[in-house]
Length: 79
Image 1 (cartoon, helix red, strand yellow):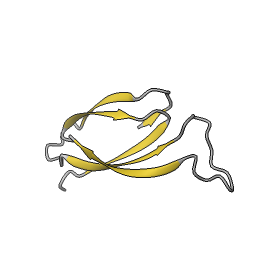
Image 2 (image 1 turned 180 degrees about the vertical axis):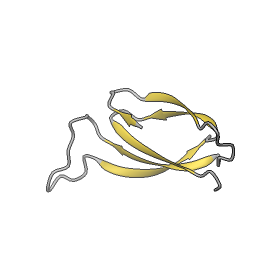
Image 3 (image 1 turned 90 degrees about the horizontal axis):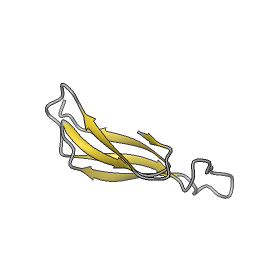
Image 4 (image 1 turned 30 degrees about the vertical axis):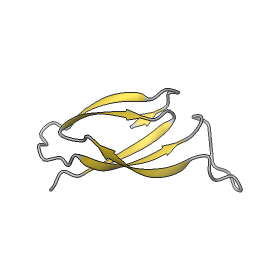
């Protein structure tokens, strides 16, 4: 999910056809204070990926995505 907005963005996820989904997973989130933030030599901490635990997953779930972020959800389907 990419959120280019200045506010968190809610999203309903429906994994149609998938029934066995772990309730927990991980999210790798790359976020910054603005959509134009870039890392530069000597200043490499403006956009740094962070891995966090995510709860409440399932075949259908709601998730909120941080402002100015790119998020990769790692969802275990047990296969």
